[in-house]
Amino acid sequence: MTALWFETVLLSDGWASDVRLTLDGGRIATVEAGVAPQAGDARGAIALPGMANLHSHAFQRAMAGLAEARSPAGEDFWSWREVMYHFVERLTPDDVEAIAAQAFAEMLEAGFTRVGEFHYLHNASDGGAYADPAEMSWRIVAAAQTAGLSLTLLPVFYAHGGFGGAPLGARQRRFELDVDRFAALVTEVRARGVEAGVAPHSLRAVTPDELATILPLAVQGPIHIHVAEQTAEVEGCLAWSGARPVQWLLDHADVDRRWCLVHATHMDASETARLAASGAVAGLCPITEANLGDGLFPATAFLGAGGAFGVGSDSNVRIDLTEELRLFEYGQRLMGRSRGVVGSGAELFKSALAGGARALGQDTPSLAVGAVADIVELEAGHPSLSGRAGDALLDGWVFSGGQAAVRRVWTGGALQVDGGRHVRGEAIADRYRRVLRDILAR
Image (cartoon, rainbow, N blue to C red; front, side):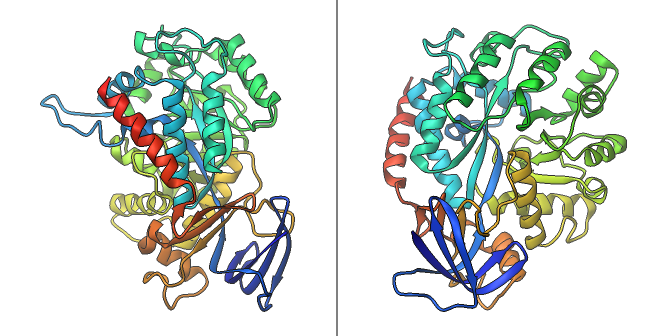
């Protein structure tokens, strides 16, 4: 049994001082507030529950900075996608495992303790299946184990290259699964004890009949889908079906609290209100959405209607929990030319904490008896946190302190980050650097 003592802790019912936690079997066994530390206790300053990163494509971490060149024709999401297709052609299973481990270690250093990995890189570079069709899934699982990051695997169904069942392009063959292969993959990963949901890639990549067939595979688990990220997607959906993407989904699927609609950037007023009422989580990825020029989510109307949101690192061009929250708020400020649109740092953190957990089929993280011991400790001596207490600590962390204020992180009671660095970070980074040099030389 491990004992941790903190000066201040964010509990489910608010902040408490002088809190002693005992951990047993990866969970919190006892919580005592207003007590002195005991001999042998590991002492800390500010403790928070760990956050879920609800949307990641881990392999894209290795692309960071490689798609930022300008061209006379201009750059947008679709030109970025072509760079991604070219990059992914070169990746082996060993490469993917090394890249994912690096991304997952950086997530922990940022204060994320669980990831929803939206995993669509299934096949070999020629589009054929590996000898073990789940080879790439096992590499993601292994990377999460190496980093010590809790994983919800979201195997992606990707069968088409456009609305109405258009055929895949040659560069999309690495992503392709038919219904039977997809069902077998979901069954296999769950049989080995991996927490898994289902993820139809987008309405561009799945036909209505296929969508209806794969959704029951979720059982009561999470269902994630990219939707309405780009205006061209909205236009394409209208041309195909006469409906906007979110409208079509709400009309044709039983969208409820199990669902996470990733991005949902371009919605009209009716779609926004209906999505909020459904209980589904809006999966927002502000850093990636800014990087790709996607647009800004209609937060005021969505949250005003009671909608829930969480955040993800998506393309992993930069992995920083507080920057995702800060950029979400700042984008809304720029759009509305006002301040405090979504809320304070504390409101942003607490809302994303609940929404991210819901999106991954988890209870809202808490430092309570029986809860998984996923804990983030902030450095009280960081200048942006000095002299503050309660929610003001979260305001200082989100809007100023950032990742530099993260001191230690535990997942399942195991220490993964100490002094702001992953405890196995150098070995993970050394492997990543070797792999990346090799990839870029191919």
